[in-house]
Length: 347
Image (cartoon, rainbow, N blue to C red; front, top):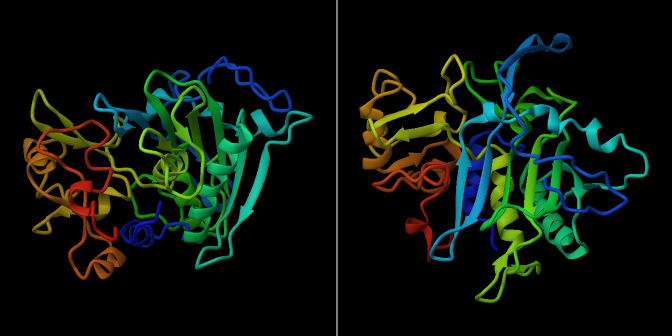
């Protein structure tokens, strides 16, 4: 798989760092229950040293599934309060004696200087090599002075689920942040210049060990009847690196909205760079009240573009087109590029 130019320029525009009951490898700790949904947790204030008060909440997960037509389809979970962040404490895994699941990858090729530390649970050697290859690609594209910690599990998932990944936390109002805006913790750490939540992994990921049609090669050329594992990992790690929007749509009322159900209702940093093709920013409440049918109509009736400075430069002013079909596809709409525009092009 080739990294698209547009993805790289969106990263730059965002100032990016630029379980199951399966029997796991006995040298690694087992996981007592599902990693992704373990209860409920609400946003809370947390004070750390001279950072002042920052507000954190459980993050979002993107999940790649096999659609009814046999194609990959990514959906986002937009209800972070359903996740228990205590499941993602580093001490729950790395502090156990006899474990050897952490590897460190530092890529100096290209422009990247990101250090990504992955803790692997249950991976076969070939699955781990493909996952690490995807990590190496991201590390070569990103820049950060703060280490990025990833919890990665290879275990049976639900029927048709290929894998999922996302930020463990979303954080706002830290030094270096745009006010009243949610960030995934890997990007938040980059902007703050230090680890804002050192007890937690930055990204949590689970991929299916039961899916029978994985291709674990790293040449980007899977057979026609197989799914490229590295490509799926690349995609889902992108969501963990802050490629997620906070917009949603109510098909019963026709209203668009954002805020994750957490008070106050705030956008993500991704949302701050989105607009309609004429240039009306979706987070401007004088143009699109939150919630409102007007915002809903824009999300399903207009072409929505990503308008970061580097994206505008890379696309010669055209901006990157997001996937916003005339019907709302929960999770797939808005948080992805529009493949109908870019398929068959260099991107």
